Length: 385
Image 1 (cartoon, one colour):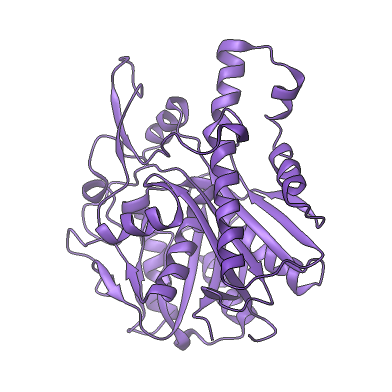
Image 2: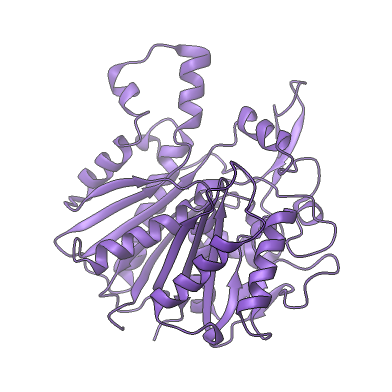
């Protein structure tokens, strides 16, 4: 492994498909969306919405909320997976948690129903608490920190972990990105913003880089990676990346694309690779007009005509703060298993768009994530050497 590369040597996942990494992969390979009908999402008590919500599950000892159970289940699965692949934790193992809206269910219950809690239950609402208890469970003594950059939080956490490793602050990092925020109030506001679609099948409504796309279906996930410079059998390598901010608008992308364009170029420079080496753009791809236009423009300007583009949001949903982590897991598992589980194309689209499950070819993957409010992020991934 080169000095600049960080190995993704363990993966854990809880998604709308269910609990576990293999459940996620099987769902993606099926080409069927994770979303299902859930009640209580409208003015009527029984009104339903199509969302990719994480089902109940996990260990009751981890707490009463799906958030706490999913976060810990994903992290434990990643650690066990890494150990099976030959990882041995160093003296300084850090923990990073990418989170935008934590413990939504418990906060909602606190404000709307209970209003009083035992001190121990109240502490569970603090974003630092699951970090501290997880460090205690494993006896890890590196730094523990939360990262938040809206939909770009997964990329932000991965780049922060790499910076820790590059700087010698830690020997290894357990990185988790969690977003289980699909309470009716949150879904309603994304609908009002005109970007979330809950009344149609995801593959019909969310068509990134295709005609007729109306926006995205909403999803939930907790995804974890073990990251190390000493990985024996990594799924993939993180070579570098970059982040920037448009400083333009609370929701809209700067139409000049100046900062997005610069972020892609900076990421390639940071990774030390040419644009010609990139084979895949694993796009943010929420199916909104402005994001599709931005990423398609960058694809055509910066990369070779043979570079292919895809987004798995029609399958897993837009998992908000965990979105880019889910999509990075797809790229890493794809390198390991020899195929990209891209969604099937359902309408005329960009000529470089992948259509369904596709064998992986040699080359790099660029993972972009454009967080609402102007958070631009790009990570450069490579197959294991």
